[in-house]
Every structure is written in C-alpha cells, then in structure tokens.
Length: 216
Image (tube, one colour):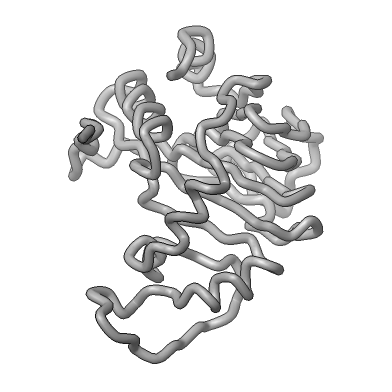
C-alpha cells in the first residue's frame, strides 16, 4: 500500500510532502455508515473538537450507553471538526497501511485517527502543536493547509517559533505529509474535509494489532 520511495523518505525522520500518494483510501459513505453504528461513537473514541460537555439520557437496547446519539452528532457536525481514534480497522485499505507502517518501523504500534468536518468554513483545530508519535497525515477528501516547522519541542516552544515553516502546503485529495514526533505543525481545514492521521508509536507495553482481515 505504501511505495518503497515513500518508505525510504519517511525513515529519514524529516518532514516530507507527498503528492497524490494515497488516492481514495476511505469514502464519505464508509464514514457515514460507521457514524450511524452506535458502538463506534463511544465518547472515548469519537471526539467533537470544542469545549462543550454533552449529556444524554440512556436509551433502550444499548450495550454501551456512553455513545453519542445520532441526532446530536448531526447537529454538531455542521459547525465543528470531529475525530475518531482507534480507527485502524475502519476498512481494509486503512488496516493495511497501518500494517505497512508497522513493518517499516520495527516494533511500532500504528493507529488511524480520522478527522472530518462537513462545514465549508470550519477553521477550528488544534492550533500549532506537536505529538509524541510520528505521523503520516493523508488528505482523503476536501482541502486543508498544513504548516510544519523544522524544529522540535525539545529546542523551543510554540511562543518562539520565529522562522518560517519548513513545509507550508495546501493538501488536495490523495496528498500526504510526514511529521516526525515532537515537531511543531498546524492543520487548517479549507473546505469540507476528511483526513486520516497515522500515528506511529513505540510503546513496548503493547504488541501491534492483529492485521488479519476477515473475509466471508
């Protein structure tokens, strides 16, 4: 799923941009189906990126009552960026990208974090930040802009980022960037957006997931 050229570049552990490298790995329809499956929108997995607290009444036949009601999701989707973690098995394509990354980075664990908004003017996000994991970020649908600074959190802080970003690019569907761990970056949605971040960690307490894909 990942070309040998891309693997070679990301193993250098430097910020990189890849044009049209991952076309059509997830559809809006696949995401829609999962948002309508209540166990998949448990509050630990599904996040609405804002400062609100949400409550709802228990409903019948639910094995997991801590799941967002679909009408609430529909309402908040119109204005907010949302995310789903623990989504590495969202479909076969995503699962095998994770497997490829776990093979490339020995003894690593890889997940898929799905970010999406249906608002054309949603610019809210996480601002300039860094992560504890390496990240391969793939623009699936829509358009986003990403800035990546060529300095890490051990050397400076977000208030002293005076230099221009090393990478400043608008991502179209299929484009991707690699962001090494502890490197400052910022993603801004410019349209209705669907993207996937593949965090690559080295937590030796856990094995990488079983990547077998069940077929019927």
